[in-house]
Amino acid sequence: MTSITQLIANISHHIPFASEAAAQAYLNQYSLDDQAALISAAYIGRDHIHYDKIQPDYVPVDVRFDRFFTTGTPPQYQFVPPSGWASILYEKNTQLRTYHEAFVRCATGSGYSLAAF
Image 1 (tube, rainbow, N blue to C red):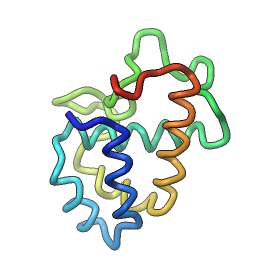
Image 2: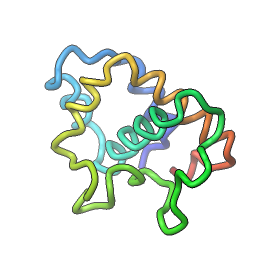
Image 3: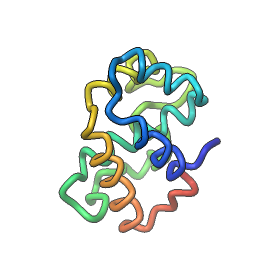
Image 4: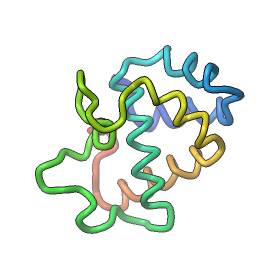
C-alpha cells in the first residue's frame, strides 16, 4: 500500500493526462487499493475545495474515512467502479491538483491521519 501523500506527489507530475488511455496506463502501475485512494481523495477534495476541514456530517458514523470512502470496498466497489477511474482522472484534468490539495488540507485540518488513509 502506497501512502496517499506519495500517491498525490507522484500523480501531480503527470497531470494533465493527455487521454483516458494515458490515465489508465498511469493507474496500471498501482494496486486497486492505491487507485481507489486517488479517486477517493479527489472526490473528498472536490467536496471541500473551499474549506479547511472536513465538513460536519460528511463522514457518516458507520463509514470509515479511508481510501475506499467514495469508491466502496473491494471487490464490489459499490459506488465508483474501477472501470471508470481513468475516465475520472482524465475528465478532472488539471482540477485534480486542486482537489488533492483540498483533500490534504481538510483531512489534516480535521485531524485525520493521512498515514491511515
